[in-house]
Image 1 (cartoon, helix red, strand yellow):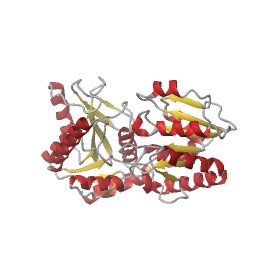
Image 2 (image 1 turned 180 degrees about the horizontal axis):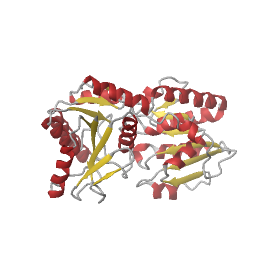
Image 3 (image 1 turned 135 degrees about the vertical axis):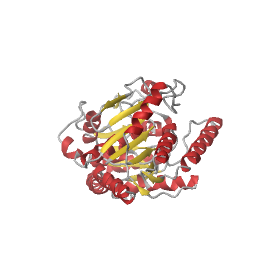
Image 4 (image 1 turned 45 degrees about the vertical axis):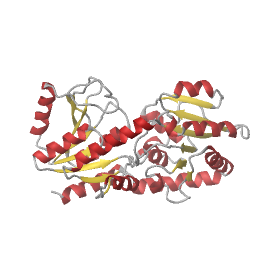
Length: 376
C-alpha cells in the first residue's frame, strides 16, 4: 500500500512538522507501507530523490516569501513532477497543516482519483507576528485556504486535543488525534551520553527551541538572572537559533548562562540527558511541543506554559509544573524545584513513564493505520 504525504516543507529543512512527517514515514515504512512525500522546494534541492524513510518530490516555488508561505511555480518542471506523483497511484493522501498551497494541491489530486485524504492539524491558534494589520491579513488568508481545503471533504486529525478544539474555530469537527510523539527507545540510546560541556556539580536548567520572543526565552533569562542572586549551584543552557540570539548573548553575559546555538539531534539528546529541569515558557500557538516529549522521555523535570497539547502530557502535578505566561510564575516554579531535589527526581521518572506509554511514534503510526483501514 502506498501513502502520499503532502507538507509545506520537508528535509533537509528542519522544523516540528518536518520531523513529524519524517518520523511518521519511518514507522509506516517499518510496517510495510511505501511512503511518498511532496513538499515545496525552498532551497534549490533536487526535484526528487530517495531518502531513508521515503521518496520525496519537491515542487518549484517563487522566491517571494518562500521560507514562510511558498507559492508554487507552475512551470514545465512542476507539471512533470505532478505527472510523476499521479503515476505513483497512491492509495491514501495525508496533508500536514491546512495553510500551505501544497495542502490544496493534495486535495485536488485526492479528489481527482477519488482517494481518501487526511489533514493533520499542528496549530492551536492563529499565528502572530505582533502586528495587528499583518496578523489580521494572516488570519483572513488562513480562513480562505481552510475553506478551500474543506471543499475536498478530508478528515481532520490534530496532533493534540487542543488542536482539535482549535479546528472548531473553522467549523471543523476532527475525527481523532494523531499525537506528536518520540521514539520509544531514545532514552536507552542516550542514557550514558553526556553533553560536551562540563556541567558537573550544577543544577542544569535547559531551554531548547527557536530564539524568538514568542517562545518565552526572555522570561526564562530574566527569571534565571534573579535566581542567580540566591543560588550559586545553578546553570542555564540555551540551545537554538533565531533572530534574537545575538541580542540576548550581548545582554545576558552571566558566566553560568551558555548559549549553544543550533545543535544537532545527538547533542540535543545528550543535553537533555545532562539536564535536571527543562523549561518551555512558550507563548506560541503550539500543537504539541516536541521538546516537551523529548525532555520527558529523557527524564527531565519539566516546567511549561499551557500551550498546545502540553496539558495532555502533563495532566497531573506529578508529571511537571504548568505555569502562567509571566516571569513571576516561572521564577517561583524554578525556585520550588531547586529547593526540592526529591521532587525533581520523582518528576523525572513519572514523566518518562507517561511519555513512553502514550506518546511514541509506534502508537501514533498504529492509530494512523487503524484510521486508514477504516477507509480502505
